[in-house]
Length: 320
Image (tube, rainbow, N blue to C red; front, side, top):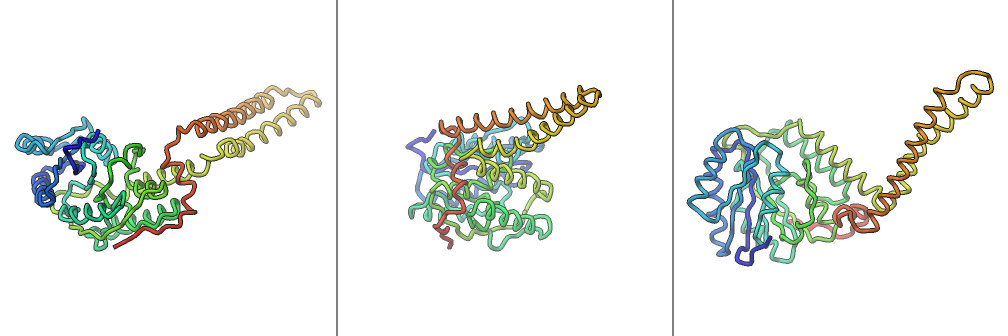
């Protein structure tokens, strides 16, 4: 819930970043203090196995502007970011990584850009300091795929350094690796998005927690978004199409069973198979009717439904 006394909230998920926490805190303060706006910092410890939580908690005892949220185990970047956003009190939300690769000194520039009338400002790591094979190439592929699926030409969906108006984030769905889709979802839902160049640094401490292993998660999330976008307006039609195959198999099995009956053979097996496939087809059609009811009663979020019109978006994202 927003607090009128707090203008800015900086959210940073942390996972085994004991060496980075203090420096990150100091740099955030150095960047935000000159704005002369009341702010808070939320560090979310995503089940770290080192002393990240202890270091962050010690900092919080000395500065009331810093709050620390701790997970009992590692859930991933998106749940950690969602927890920080859910507990944010500021009217403007700033998200960033906790490994010092994002530069807090870019925050004032991005906040000023937001105040020009935008709902979200996305960082673009134009000179990215990461490994080519395990980070840059997968990121390039993911950005191309996300752009193709959503129709939104954001060049760096994976950059965690973003600035939002808090009200546009209140109904945003978060799960798996969904944080990278937020700018595209908000854009096609009607939010004004700007993309700006930001600094990016090589990792100073520890090792990257991400690599090729999370590609499949991004692909699954893309599939989910595409599926939602495809069936949301006409779920009955789409589930009826899915039901055609089991219905056809059921029909063929029943014909075979009738032929077997006429020949004096047992029709038990084929008639049972026919019945099972018929039930499956009816189940799929029922899901379509249920989806239709959900859609008509507005239970699907605006950001999800907006994906349906992604290919019709005419406005271009303004980049600097």
